[in-house]
Image (cartoon, rainbow, N blue to C red; front, side, top):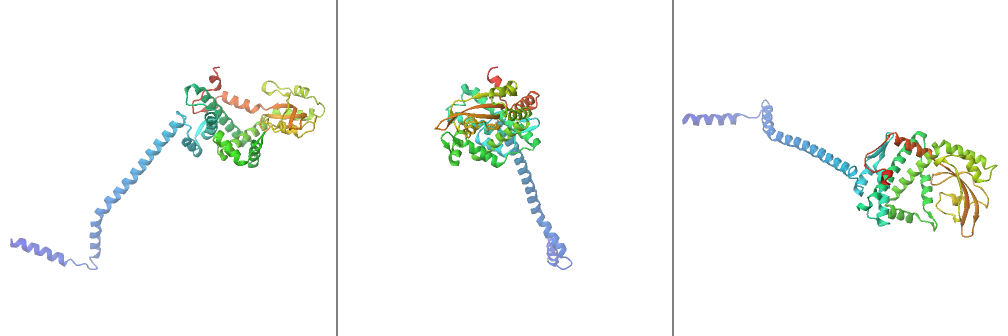
Length: 351
């Protein structure tokens, strides 16, 4: 018992004698730091695990979101506002043509506009099985238009063709005109929103793509351009439109045609033909000009007019066919791949 008491007193004396000096300060610092490390390392380990878990959860969530978006857009073909907005942000393809991606948003902006019009202006229930064929038709039309616009964009890069803001503004200005006059910008925007569910930016985008396709179609159609030049020359010596059209020839869809219209309003929506005729004197012939609808070259002669602003005119039309023919050939050659299932028009018509 005495030995145990003496040993305890000896240890207390040694502890009291362990004073901090210049020689032992490093030893004491290391002893204190060592005691703190057992609290530091577990926190570092927990933080490391937290970062890893966060990354894993984020990757899983992103994968689930990607699968959900893919499933809704491609197999389900969900065209709701939410998924449409996703396609506006992400350049997801709905098809490819000759190696060029067709943006899903370009397809949806066309399909949604037609679906909106049928639902809210025609009162058609597109969810009904009885109207499935009509839904398939507007889907096919929207997809074909998106594919054609993308092909036109590819050719536009090749031929260095572009559409300016001024051209888009002029086209929209023409769209604002009707038989009742010219609608204000606010009225026009309200109409396109009400009829087609388009914002002004979406309407400008659709108009720009239409104009680009027209410019490309005029550029690549060598046959129509040759007939245009021949028509310009022929008008100097031959005033008979029927004979001129027959001389220019062409077969099938490329055949040059002549015709006569009854009295129509000078602001008739006919590609600018009535408006051009209204600017002529009776019997006068216009120069060769492009239709504002992009379907070909025209010449008109004013036949008659009345005080109410109606005109009757004769015309010659040189149609554009090369763009459509090239697009059909590319499709036939298997260079168009579609990522959604939409029946072709022939199948929809039962042919």
